[in-house]
Length: 110
Image (cartoon, rainbow, N blue to C red; front, side):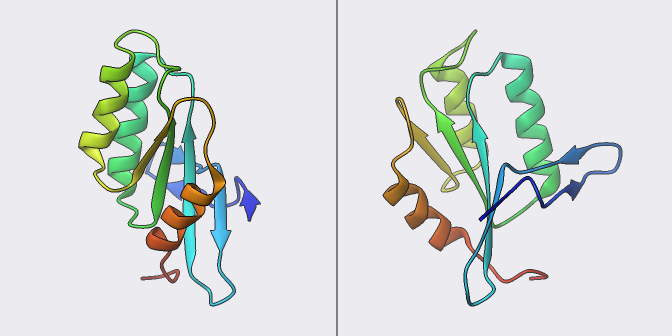
């Protein structure tokens, strides 16, 4: 696991996932943590993740930390990226995160 080492070029912007996890067989998964957000931040995050189009990106979302629309804003992430969003009320459960990472992991260049 390495922190902020996989920049994703989006043209005039960059998406820098919080973590890159690499399995010993070469598969990788990227993890982006979405904590305290404002509606504008969430809109930018959704746009960047869509533009990146990464199959192996997992979003870990803190359910109750949003401002503005709160839970409704967090729901926008789940609608935009079904199957790639894990939500937690306070802190992530590592067992759940690692299970989702295993599902999301792919070989680089795929």
